[in-house]
Structures are given as structure tokens and as C-alpha cells.
Amino acid sequence: MQGYIIDLKVVKDDDLIVTLLCENELITSYRFYGARHSNINIGYKIDFELEKTKSSIPRLKDVIQLGFPWILNNQKMYAWQRYLKLFYPHLKELEDLEPFYFFLLDNLVSKIEKQNVLRAILESYLLLLDHEGRLHTDFECLICEIKINSNLSIIRGFLPVHKECIRGKVFDYKKIKEFFLTKKSINLNDNEVENLFEVLLLGL
Image 1 (cartoon, rainbow, N blue to C red):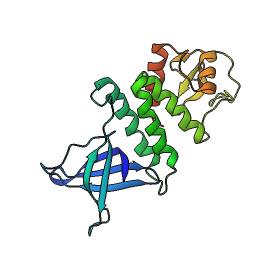
Image 2: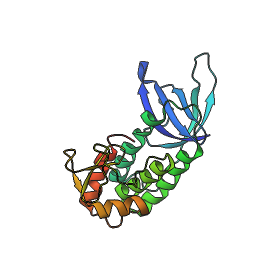
Image 3: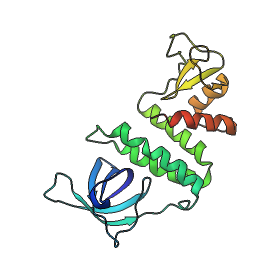
């Protein structure tokens, strides 16, 4: 099996509870601490086996890390791990999982190799919002429910609001509208990209 590690919890003696985003499910497993074990961390893609135990969760074994070409790039890895952490609270209540999420991350790994990591993540996130029916391209303000047609603010979940309705970073309306419709960040400047990434980190 293969999956992306989206959550790690340390339990007794440095053992770990590991949550993996796999193609059709979220798997919670137990990993015993030991010198013979390879290091694992949030954001890693691994190949693994599960072993049934007397416990309610299986044991993670025969772990092989499936590396990315950019895994030693600290800037890319740090942004990637911050994004992957958001998937656990977003998906943890689901028993069955659509393959969409697994392949979204697979595609993002490839994009990060060739593209600025923050831009790649933002474009990936718009695909997620669109898939879940949460991408608000009607540009109606969440607060006052009146249409937005000038510069605006963006809040958690990339919900658009009038800049007058909330204190937040102000974005160019035309640029954000184009970004939402094309799902391409090419016309956003680096400062706008960084500000949008900070909004994204509030939660999926």
C-alpha cells in the first residue's frame, strides 16, 4: 500500500500513531519506535504493510520512503508539510475517501518540482475547493451577502468578503477573480501569493 503521512502523534516510549492518506481511505496505524526503523515525518509518501494486532489499530511495518526529487529542498519541504498537516483535521471524520485527494497530492508533487512551491500549493487548493463545491466564483460577500465588484479580502476557505466588512489583507478583485476561474497564479505577484498562502494555513 502507499499513502501520504498527514498526522503523527507520539505515544509511550516514542512510539507513533501514524495517519495516512491513501487512495481510498484514511488509515490510522501504530508504529513502534526502534533503531532499525527508517525515519518518517509528515508529508512523506511511503510504501507500507499493515499487520493486525490485538489493538484496535494495525501495526505499520515494512515501511519504504518514496522520495520526491525536491525532498532535500528545505523551503519546498517546509511549505509542503504545512499544507499536508491541514488534511488531517479536514478529512479525519471520513471513513471512505475518494481517490481525488491522493491523486491531487501526487500531481502536486510533480508540480512542485517545476514550479514555485507556494503557487503550486495554491493552485492545488483551488482544485480541492472546486471538487468539494466550495469555490465561490460568484463573489458574493460572506458577511453582508452583497456582490463584490472591487478590491476585496479573503478569509479561511478562500471565502471572498468586502474589504470594508472585515479587517484583513486587501487583494485586487480582477486578479483574484481570474485566479479563481483559471486556477492559475501567473498574474499574482509574490506578495499576493504569500498572503494567500497565509490564509490557506488557517485551514482547508
